[in-house]
Image 1 (cartoon, helix red, strand yellow):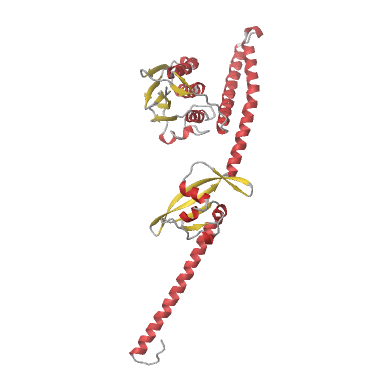
Image 2 (cartoon, helix red, strand yellow):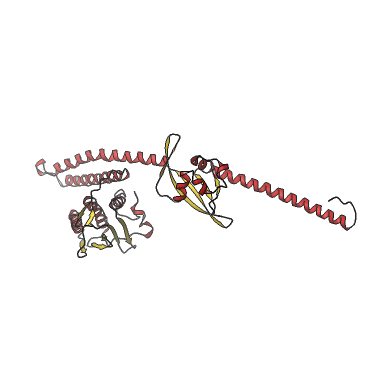
Length: 373
């Protein structure tokens, strides 16, 4: 406003001009700041190692970094600000992400004539107090390749080691035979130590071989209907010398009229022997072990209760993972036994778990389907 008078109108015009100047300065400074923050946010998003896409509560794309756009095969101008429902109609990957926001299984995407494997995860966000979601595609191709190489290596080593270990055991049996000559007490003790170590090596290689078979999906499950009491009896008979050595009292509690179980007998006995071996190892001389069988909701439940030191709550899930042993465990094995047991049980359609309190023993249990006639 151009008014050069010195009266009140001139003063009003000067105040209005000053206010307009301040407003213009304020607006320009905020726009510059907003543009700077926008570019900085875009730089951060594009620097992320994982493909990331942000969507608001209305299903509009807030952002998508370059890796996400590359996987989707889209450009930023045709993605950001667009409705995901519209984009999903012509983009299978985006449609899959919307239908499976938190997938647990890797899926394959072919890029540059090479198979790549991704895991999809999602995180809730707040945008102006309104809930949104960020989809993250994690490329796990390198990890899967390393895992396959590890599995193949373990399978080869385990298979090759079993032959010489079996040869060592055969030689030990010949040395124990009186026909090959007598041994003095020191030699007998040395022979027993070698036998113990060879048995441990054979057990470790067998567990590794079982694990690699499970990981490669080559494990052979042969299901059939069988009396659960027969399975428990076979497992207890195999471990009779160990229970006698520790003078353990083994009690069986079989519910009446338990139906036959639909399982692989060999794998089920393996699981029972593994759980019983762990219970025996952690038991003190003269302790009680209780093996129970009962029927629950079309399932047959096996449980083994011991009087050992128990397992802390934070480790009751972890001990079923590979190479994990609870602190204070007396086990000298690989930490694979429970992991293999879990995979065997789940492959037969069952579940495995443990109930325990420190100082009050533990009860390991697993269930399997009943045989349906």
